[in-house]
Image (cartoon, rainbow, N blue to C red):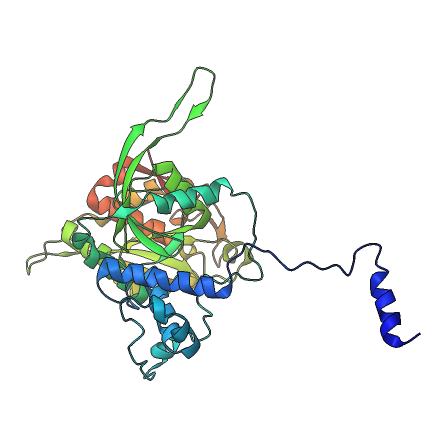
Length: 398
């Protein structure tokens, strides 16, 4: 029996059909389709804005900017998209990179594109409530007709974040505030207004109904939404952050509120915030532990012997922040802050060099951004509407 006949008998003897392979009929888009779809988003952006996407105008626009550059440096992609280039976006000669930023913005391999189906992408999975809410969050957005009056402020907030004057901190449920900035999925937005339409109450059967209402949120990409307050809170809790107040502005507001400094004014002293450098385990392990105090002398002079004083936990300290005060009673401000954070006061015994026991009462467990926020509320006069939740380390409405 020759080899060809023997091989044919083996192929014919396939009772389980293992050799009967059918061609794939996957409905998934191929790479060419995804490339065209991704370029169509750039076309749509050009149609809406009458310009190419820029690198410094928000994360979403930066992605389109990077995508367009990656296409321009790839001759194969350029040729494939020629018939779809209705605005002549691909007729521009690519520039030689002149800086590190230019190199980072160019992505010839498409590594920064988010359309390519990756190894870990899950398909045919039933959407969760969170994913539906996120879809709704985007779908409810519409162009913001008066975005012009917000655009420069968004750029200023982004600049503050880049320079460290503002920070991103964890969002806690129930802490959505009117007039504050937040970040969700990398997009900065401003909560301009919250209109409460439903107060928290209990139904006759004991079911709790939480406070809710409509919002007006302005996004840095020029859109706005009117989603429900609790829906936004859930999204931020799952994947969002709070933008803190501008530290320099808080200092300036503090001065403008309490100070009208002239040559006749007398310096009253300093309100300060300190961080302990103690090497004791019971102190080092306490997260967000700060001392809020008052000094008539400079803070540097006041703390130079901190390691010998029980009020400073018998250890050196780091000066985190100091506010110079005029024309006011700093002790009252200090007392107001102590009362506000009173339920988070450190309860610990410290022994001096002679063995005498002391219980310092000026150390509080609260995130620095929250302390700054409390000072901001004192300055604005809104402090009476809020209280500190020491369990969740957040400021909440009374």
